[in-house]
Length: 131
Image 1 (tube, rainbow, N blue to C red):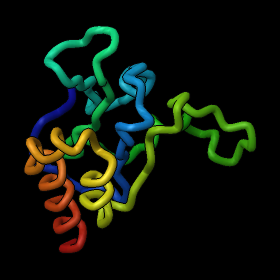
Image 2 (image 1 turned 180 degrees about the vertical axis):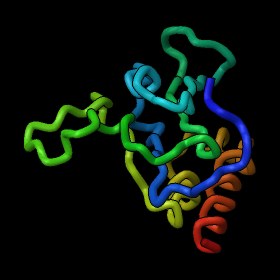
Image 3 (image 1 turned 90 degrees about the vertical axis):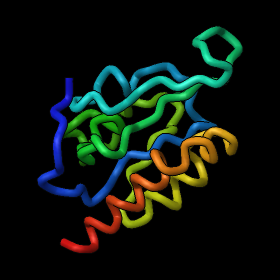
């Protein structure tokens, strides 16, 4: 379980999953060192045929990029990506709220969870700007 409590440092970048590209395969969920990725689903369950995607809890994301690519391989031209659908993007913290509002999930889901998703990203951007 990831450590809870106030942040010591706000990351330069946060991982955002484009829900339209995500299939819910959980590849990113398996590698996250801070356990901040969760499988989400519309219609209340995880059944075949339901729309499902992974979502990153920005409050807990440390910007490590492990959900995007295997660590230590940045210079390798044959980089091994974690997400087979290229659904995860590292976004500057200052832009995370805007990107989350656009691609973080189906429009009705974003609307219903605005404070948790976009509000959290905005608070992190404000904290980053203050430091």
